Length: 121
Image 1 (tube, rainbow, N blue to C red):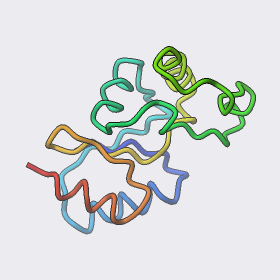
Image 2: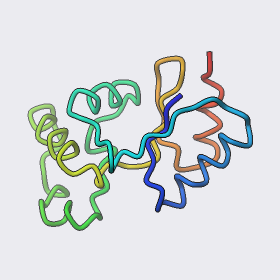
Image 3: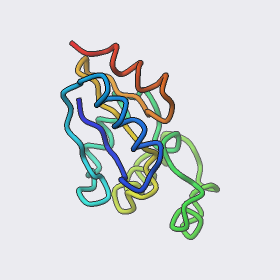
C-alpha cells in the first residue's frame, strides 16, 4: 500500500494513525514534495474509478485562480484537469491510498481507510 499525504492535513494524519494501529506495511508519499506526474494521476484515477474533477480540491487558492470550478467536466477536458493536478498537486484530494489489489480509495474517513485495509492481498 501507498498513501499520498500532506503532513499538515488532519485527515492524512488520521489515516496514517489508523494504518499504524492496524500494523499495516505501507509507504508514505508526501505528494507535495514528490508530485505525481500525469501518468501516475491517470493510473490513480483508473484505480479509484473517478475522474480528475472528482479528486480536485476546487477551494484551494490556486484552483480559484485557475477557475477550475468553471471548467467543463467531460472527456474532452480530462487532460486539462490532469495537467492542472500535475502542475499544482495541492489541488489533489487527500489522502489517497493505493491498495494491494490494484484499486485505490480517497481515505478521508475511517470507513474509507478500513475499506482500503480490506483490499490487502
